[in-house]
Image (cartoon, rainbow, N blue to C red):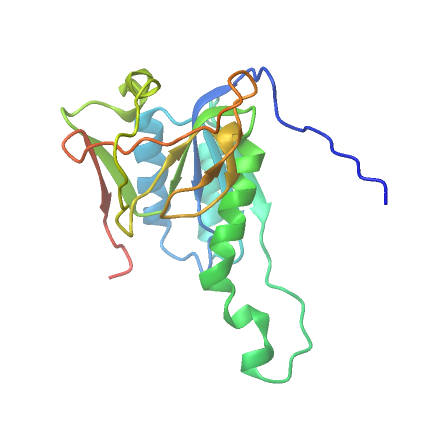
Length: 211
């Protein structure tokens, strides 16, 4: 068997965006006010790339999407994310019964690959989540450079509901709430690592619009 490997990693990306945002697929999107909050918050934070996965939503949301598409410095990409075709005769055999729980992982991983070479940083978030930095500075003003030379001294355990901000080119295997598997730095030949930001410096708030 002939095995051919092609390195598709971007060597010297030229980023059009400093910060992009990936959200989980939109199922039964109804409340247009949630999307206004979402866009306004992330635009305020400096995000200019949005990748949205669309499964189902009410007609009124199209007006909101069109409104933000008219903002000149924003790039909004819509990805159709339909349910799976099936001829299952019962609920247990129908894969779409699990789509709302399991397909967010697929969408987020796809989103990171779509963002490679386009955005330097990508925030993976829910529609109703926000990040707060201490002191109260914008995420676009947060200095990530101070973490580049950090060293991990001890083993640690991540809490269940951490959220991550990625360098898309450095992610190889994706998990939503936990440590990922990373690419290898082509210059140092060492695997990229991740840094945990102290809660005194930044926290994530989940507003739970659905409650």
